[in-house]
Length: 82
Ligand SMILES: [Zn+2]
Figure 1: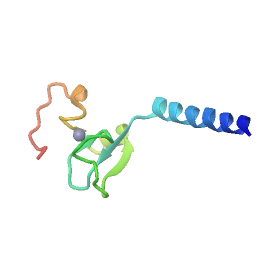
Figure 2: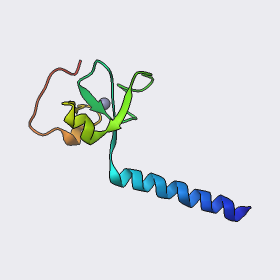
Figure 3: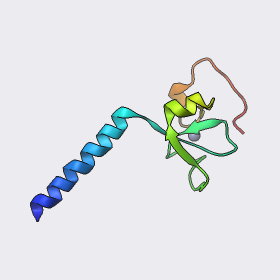
Figure 4: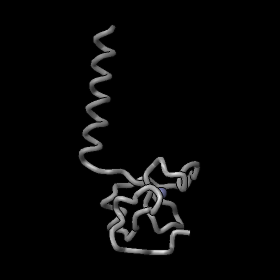
């Protein structure tokens, strides 16, 4: 029984690590033009928030949120985050 539990734990850990390694998940809102981290206050408790891979968000012309994706913002300054 204990062994089963450990196996499950290792599997879950492996899955979460491989997901992180493969793609970064971001969250967008239907009317927003930014992508956010899941923990961002701007998308928390929004049931219409959509999860997708960052690559896909970029392909759809979303830009990084200034609150949670500061590290992704380079020189581009964009004031549409309201
Ligand atoms: Zn954000």
